[in-house]
Image 1 (cartoon, rainbow, N blue to C red):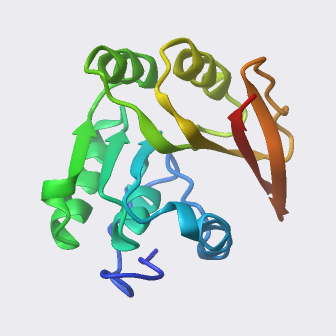
Image 2: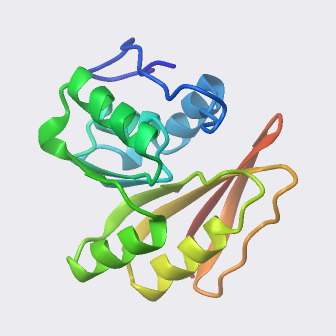
Length: 182
């Protein structure tokens, strides 16, 4: 896994050992960032279920102003911190080593909102639906913000009355749902 473009282009990232993390393939990441390229400079990026932090670090490399990484698995949190230091994005990063629902409440209570929220929970779990509902309830997505949900082809398309899926891309067994406010 590596940073594809920007200031840290070509930097190889550490990944957690074992099978507990499913990194987003480079071709999916490259396609996604090509789609949202004009939204990245200066944005506030939330990487929920961050794994190795590859998505948020890619955003920072492409000139996002800030990225918050939420991850509950201890081994992954250690990898995230190592990757942030490796690409020298410490000053523009925040790591929240906690469950997504707790992190979303913390961010909301702290008055934070994000221009882009990337959600990549374990495939087959119900974590995304709960997170999306909490994001809407707590008003964490900025007014013209974009929420991207990465899911497996067997995972259900999520519905929320406050968000609309306006674009969907399929890459093998991965689907990206692009959502915005109604």
